[in-house]
Image 1 (cartoon, rainbow, N blue to C red):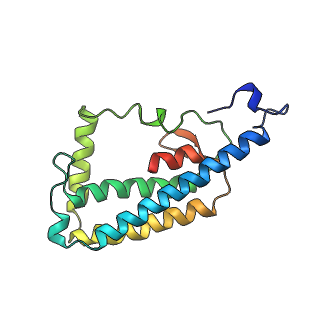
Image 2 (tube, helix red, strand yellow):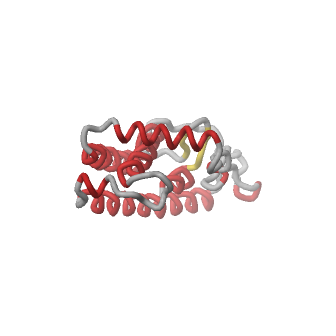
Image 3 (spheres, rainbow, N blue to C red):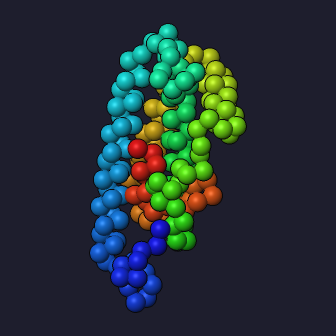
Length: 167
């Protein structure tokens, strides 16, 4: 989101204060996402195939289904970190999610996509293996990118806000 006029320099660029704030938010969110990704990897790496098929608190989803859903976000991160932009942000981490409504027809289609995608693996541990390499690559890409804004799913987000959508 563009800053208030007091946060803009005379040239129309973010002020130094805003740049520092945005970098702190980015660093904080990157640390949070990296930590969560590592914890998920540690947890699912210890599960058997039978454990991966157990139910979760997400209605109708097994552990494998839920991990496959999370894998989609790690894929989204890789794409976004390779898609920097100078365009102004049009959503923040909260408003990004506004169009996604639970229980609607889109949610049913997404749930089916997740179920079919997760079931395509010969063994649930295949999802764990793909999660591990993809989530680690996403964190490496985030750390390596000097850019401040990224595009994802038709939107532009500040780096910290984009990382917050992954946390």
